[in-house]
Image (cartoon, rainbow, N blue to C red):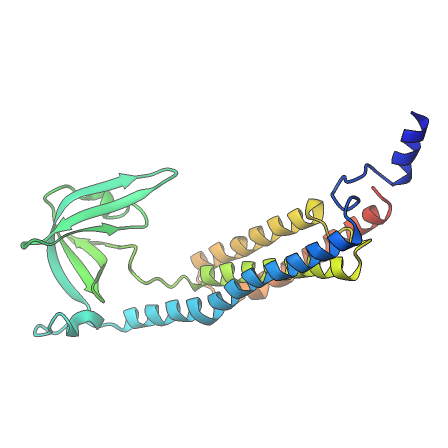
Length: 259
């Protein structure tokens, strides 16, 4: 019993408490290479977010804001980039709040067309609609973007929105995840025998939670306030870097002391 206690005490803690003590240098290097390779996935998502997704949504919203009412003689093909209005009759509505929220209105025209229009929330119009109500739909690029009844209007889920801040938040989060995975992998390659505190528990987990909280904590208010999208990475990245530095300073002595 004395010998067993001495062995446990001599390792500076329980073996394998965070998984680092059990890993051989070869296994640590393998995990390092794996983490670096995995970091390429969020890095690619970050590139797509800022290089393709965000510019495409910005261009779509600008085109929608610049669209003008269609001329009376416009054909269906020519009317795709202008705003046309058509009368419809409400067949039924679905207003379901909760975990799986659903807000839909089924419409039909005087001919045989029948379709479902989705919305992001219930108000101000969808919750008031009843079967048989006559509504006016605004159509842009062959999609219903606005529904109107008696002057009460509501954008559909297909209406372009100026919410580039959320695109930036997701892209920034992907960049931070890529940087975290790359850093944790590189440390394992450089120092396979002593890469603490760059382990999942607690450093990696805390850093991941911080990154998610900061990105959405900045992105969502940015949408409400209407500040530019570039403010999200400009604020989020420095905050996460500072948090990572402080956490490292706190955890590094504990890792070195075997606590």
